[in-house]
Each structure stands twice: as C-alpha cells, then as structure tokens.
Amino acid sequence: MRLKVRPIAVTFLGLMLAGVAAYLVTVNELMWAGVILAISGSLDSIDGALARMTGSASSAGALLDSVVDRLAEGIVLLGGLLLALSIIIIP
View 1 (tube, rainbow, N blue to C red):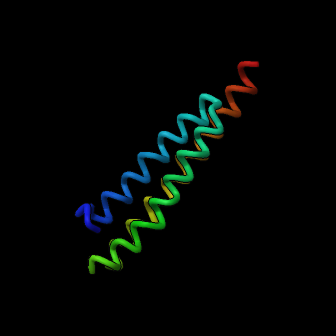
View 2 (cartoon, rainbow, N blue to C red):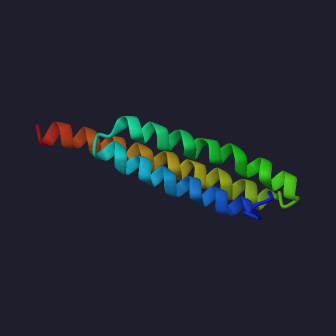
C-alpha cells in the first residue's frame, strides 16, 4: 500500500509471471518454473487484500481478477502441454 501500487497492476504482474513460468515449463526448467509460479500465486492472494485495504474493491475488479487467474492457469497448462508434445514428438 505504501508503494502506491494499484491492485490491477499486481494482478497483471501475476499474469506476466505465469507466462514466464509457462515458458520455463516449456523448456523443461521445472524447478525455476515452480519458484516463479509460487511468486505469481502469492501475488494473486495479495491483489484482493490490497483492493480491500485501499477501498478500491468492486465486483468488476473481482470478476477481472478471476478471469485473469483462469487465464494464467491456462497459460501454464499450455506450457505443460508444449513440454509433453516436445517429449513425445522429438524424443
């Protein structure tokens, strides 16, 4: 709160980190992907609390947060799919 970061910025930073984690999964760097994904998940828990603390919580923000969370999960799962396909297709 002291950094004056808006909750939406925290939400999208978590999405970007999920994209980085998906890339790391794709290139089979699973330990680092797990670390980045843990940070991304931590940011997901922070954004809602930050919105409530700053008084900027709204139903539209909650919906956007939920949609971005599902998108982040889909991106990471896509990274896992690409890893699996690269193992199967290119042995």
